[in-house]
Image (cartoon, rainbow, N blue to C red):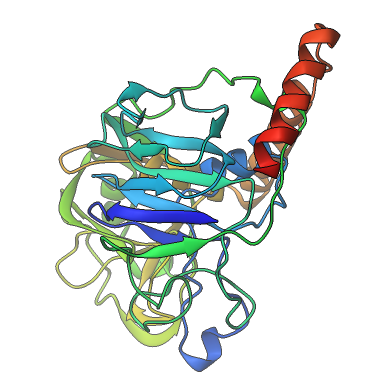
Length: 334
């Protein structure tokens, strides 16, 4: 009762919201890169908010189901197919025993998410099921998935019929993004001209872009004297500027501390726009206040609540719904 990995894709890992409380001991938080897509995937299946998913990157995996379950696919469009037929995203998909789910390369975005109604049977390590690749900790044996791996399910679970409702979303088809940032904590180390350069210039995503961070290419950001500091903690989305003057945005698998000045931090609601970029995509920065960033976060939470209400709207075709529910019960009892 679970999934067999036929092909692992470029980088497929088990992730949740991350492993908190251990940065002081040198363990990064890890967790999903695109929190918004992750939450919507679980929302579509009425899963717990922090239920573990598969995160896929640039080239997706091929999975075979050894038992019936229900899944949801969100994030970038990896052109998913089920038994060779195109599969929709942002809706509940009913998988039968023996079905093969295949992903191609990312048509839009660069990261996708697969949630499972039956819950992946992955052990909790230090409070999380997420994979920390640098430490070889958590997830599936602390590594990315490979051919012939097998992950079981923790329970049999069928869903209410109304959760087949589809959300109309295609969020990552642009090659430019404006990231709203809160300045600091070390913006005072940079010259007035350096700040103007940072906020007024276009930067390009380089191929040095992984779960640890995203290095950008663009105009030199001038410090007053130096951008070196005594190492301190690093938040998700912190923007370091080393001596070469080019910004590096630290992401899910970032180191816990760093010795370069952080000119700003990306607002949490805009991190999905960043992590769904590809090489050569363009980035601009826009400064906002802490209060504005908080208001944006509250607005996003309200939006997710609105999506939950859409998904849970009562089904009008009562007879059809009863037939579907009866079929699902039979399917999951097999």
